[in-house]
View 1 (cartoon, rainbow, N blue to C red):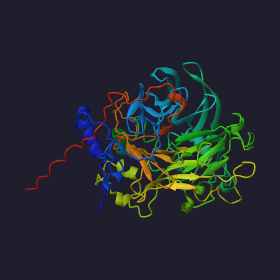
View 2: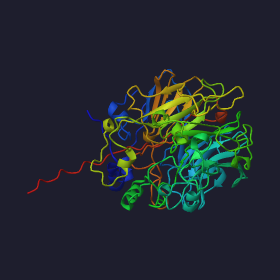
View 3: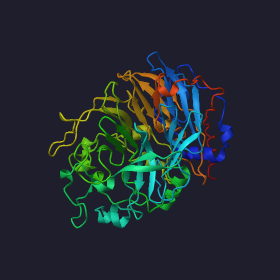
View 4: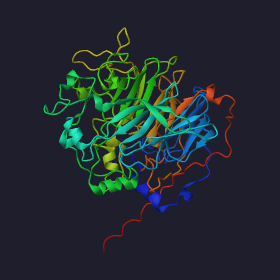
Length: 554
């Protein structure tokens, strides 16, 4: 039997034909074990899934889980029974939150006004709230040529690492060696990492910076800058990893994508393709003084040296490891630096890379959510291509036709006796194989084409966020699911121009990631963590009735 999902046309009809109040019903999260059927688990959106606590066994890890619904200004803390025990309510939509040991909450939020950038994960604002929800710090970084996006990391000294776009003009990009046929009219938006030192209750000082643009190479035009042999420079970014001309997006399709919330009002036909790296996660290892970053456009994770000065980070010398700001390590797609083929690719649109903490099983290994592992028999080139096509004749996607799946990977980078990452002449960075991985037994019931994350717990279990449908579940090292919860909240937050906060379209319950905390976490000292009353109202998706059958032609 073919498994099919509701497509965005259903959701569009829901949004514009139904009042939100009609879709909200009192529905306390279930406490009994509920087994979701294959139809629901294989659905890309999970719109018809049972929500709240699905299952909890005696192998589940006690504690609390922090998360923030994508279309909401709220952040929730739930216990292992799926009950909300605390919530923070802000003014802006939040992309990601971090709970600090002092009980404050640091949130990456979406600024309401930034003039340039149109890729996913837009933010522009960082706010810190105390336990009661009062703003104690507010930092804005949303200008015509820079925008923080996707993820932040709180450092031990209280500074904040953030991913930021910057603007490179088309002329500058072509002079740097970008192929003219791949360069949008609006230019490029490569990523950089900035370190922000908070300044009182408002603002901050950028005390360190690393730019991807300082470490590029190209091999297509010897008359342009940065020309060289890509395979001889594995610590640099090849500007021309794609070999096909940039395909313009028709205005009709772009308008449709805006209407459905798949892109922002800033999107134009001239800036499609400007987001060349789309970094979506950043993490810091204080012992190594290193930063790891995820780039789904490159299908790789990168490690850089934070021990450099900003000036050293522009070059290839200096810092603890002697390479300046060039890459110390990369993994996932060796084809990007001409030391592998498509068959060697390991990562596909990945999210949420981080080091496993000290004292945890797998300590100092890296863990990543591998979103979109390709099915060799895939009959649909891209789920996003179908979702964004206003002329698509079939508004339903057959999972049996698509068939991609997700996985969580744990892997251990190869190092020498001094701790430096190992790479041999003409070889790719290792390892070839993962240390541990998780996929669903049938593969296809665990799939999220975007967002998502994974966190190793101290007892060796792993908390996984299948983001597209808002599913959180905990697995043992053997892959047994011991706790499962599906996000029941969606507040339909809108931007001032009336557009949706991403992700939108059919992904109403979408979730960037979730984070588990043990009961003895310092933030909870002296705090009341009983279930709040009343519990927040869940959002119940009620699909509109099917259209009446067409009358036969007379």
